[in-house]
Image (cartoon, rainbow, N blue to C red; front, side, top):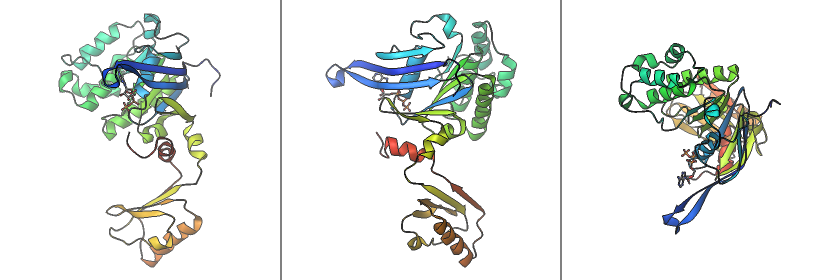
Length: 315
Ligand SMILES: Nc1ncnc2c1ncn2[C@@H]1O[C@H](COP(=O)(O)OP(=O)(O)OP(=O)(O)O)[C@@H](O)[C@H]1O
């Protein structure tokens, strides 16, 4: 991690909401010790299940919610008390977008740009995010993914030093996701501190330099994706392959593994795979004259780490 001052430093963050009528007027504690440090030129991901406290953490970090305890420093200032000077250096893309439904994208972007002294070139943003394709449609008629891209443009138009993205790939089709991820990578290279929330492990795995796993209002694990996945208790691995559908896998030869045909023609064997297991699978291919169309062997994923921590049940 770089030694320059952190763009965001959150220590022991506590947030209570309430009083809640359903709890006899008691307060409800939704954050109970969140610690995060985010640096410039890095993508920092807050990863957690639904309701873990990611959005509330971001809102406290942005100065939109007042913390009940702990401390938050954003670009060296307390975001709850800071004025317009700090806000002009921070870009925020909220989960719901918060876009005015009656406006059209271009006038909205021009209006947002007019509020900043150092606005980014609008034409480039509009082209990069494919907004030109729906520039004259009113916002209420835009698809979820189009709104998402417009919200990202609004967050970037002021040329911020820090960018907050709440679930940036929600509702995006693969093409839009690709465009947004490329842009995030470029912004990181430009030196922005990017802090995003996600419950999509794939997003964290693909984008994040550093990950904080939030569970029930606390930071429970942190590290690079490689660090988080390296200290696994068992070397859980997985082999996936594509072959003609309907084949009977030799499951009795590896009772310690889970094996099956996930969808027609897509097979998966997962667990503490040994070299002998791989040889067994390869022998079975040879015996059955199967030449897989593709074979993917992966190490323990962030998903395994995440599920170990957050549990497999829905909360
Ligand atoms: N204003 C509020 N009053 C009471 N409870 C709230 C309030 N805002 C959030 N909560 C609760 O705080 C908890 C954390 O919510 P938060 O939105 O921060 O989670 P999240 O990790 O962002 O979840 P998701 O992935 O579903 O967006 C949830 O249980 C939520 O119901």
